Image 1 (cartoon, helix red, strand yellow):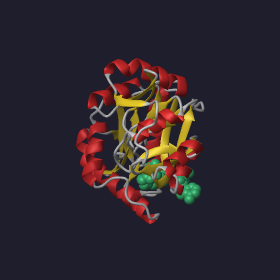
Image 2 (image 1 turned 180 degrees about the vertical axis):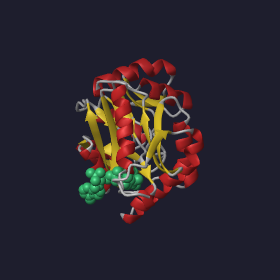
Image 3 (image 1 turned 90 degrees about the vertical axis):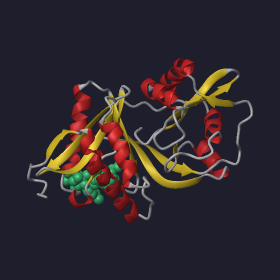
Image 4 (image 1 turned 30 degrees about the vertical axis):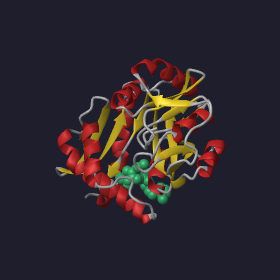
Length: 291
Ligand SMILES: CC(C)(COP(=O)(O)OP(=O)(O)OC[C@H]1O[C@@H](n2cnc3c(N)ncnc32)[C@H](O)[C@@H]1OP(=O)(O)O)[C@@H](O)C(=O)NCCC(=O)NCCS
């Protein structure tokens, strides 16, 4: 692999056929950086990362790129284009080719794509212990927005008085999207509709009114609610959280303490970063690992 001054890295659109090589790199890259800091890998095995990337690489909702050197894949990156605000990741580079400028090229490729399409902003979630990714993203213009605590477990309280949680139906979409616009200033309607179809989405009602929703209580799901009580009822409705856990904004002191009092454990610290449009949310929210 050449040094970063040598420009032989080709960045091209990813195809489903790239998924096995990229999935292995993704697993190896996360395993290595997490192990170096004493954390478990975010994914159980390369078959999971390969499956995830195969889905993203073949979906029209994602713009995905790979970096190649002499015909060999060095890494990949994805941009979730399902909402006005884009979500970035996972970006991973072969551990043997890191710190050579490949990641910067793959970041720039998706930033350029978002600019070309007129996206008002891009967000991502970064492993807080990782100096290199923090430095790379910050130097590309991403600002730190929120410290997050990835949390796992099952709450002792199983419900919140006055709040009713039930599976979300297609009819709930308008209320959920309005809530998202109220809290964040934009909706994530495509993602929500997919989650309703997949059966992972839930809503909470108070006084027969939708006051919160989740696409999935999982690392790849997001949740939005009017108040912490609504969010707590969604969290309490889950037997466990898929993947490493849910992402709780650590500055939401009340929600974080409620999670701790209820027995949830902090798995790892993460950071929400953004470039472009960002307004502080006005409500309770859990980002997905994309944003
Ligand atoms: C994070 C990752 C994608 C970055 O890709 P990469 O090819 O290694 O990174 P690059 O070489 O393009 O850029 C790294 C930049 O950070 C800088 N950097 C690295 N460590 C640094 C430190 N401790 N302090 C300051 N800057 C640092 C480098 O100098 C370089 O900046 P430059 O381009 O201005 O010289 C890659 O290392 C990776 O796959 N890591 C493991 C998986 C992971 O964490 N993915 C990100 C999930 S959020």
